[in-house]
Image (cartoon, rainbow, N blue to C red):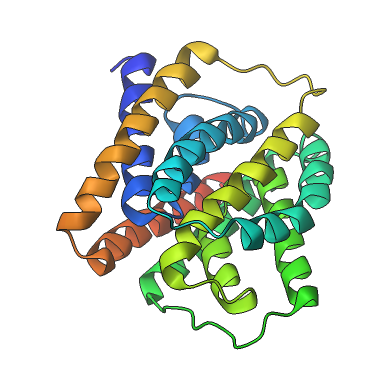
Length: 247
């Protein structure tokens, strides 16, 4: 199977997961780029930001049309993460590949556990500005370092910290993801990482198409089933990445 075909397949899988679950699908992008397409960790996290931005904007438009985006809350949350995203994005190129991979494996494992537990966050009665700033800054740093959207962190944070209704949390999280990813990508512009656009573009194209199909799939299959299946796959990926680095 050629690298081009693998890029098409991997992009479709990432887009399908993102569209079906609304959050967390993009975390498959980095391991797909590394283990299927041969990217180095630094190049993979940078390329992932490009893919995350485009697919998230596509999904954000769809949610905005349905009125499922809380723009004020999203911009407040995103604003707290912009500086950490920029700093982390600039520093990421200086982190050894082994450490970067281990950090990503740990994050993927955390995301998998959260999905397998399937707990729905409960909104707080009052939003705390300090907690909102802290959560937003943390998400921005994660996006900058590891090139992931972090929707699996953003959604519960928006619900519990800013009291965003669960029905609007996914759409609002996409706004936060786009803002953080744009800043993180800009911070990496000066680095010497080379990207293989011949593989990124087909990956991106099928990811966008897969995101639309994922939304239709979500209407037919139980969200709990989708989340459990994806959580199991992600946990396997996290373990494989961690073991691969340690060997």
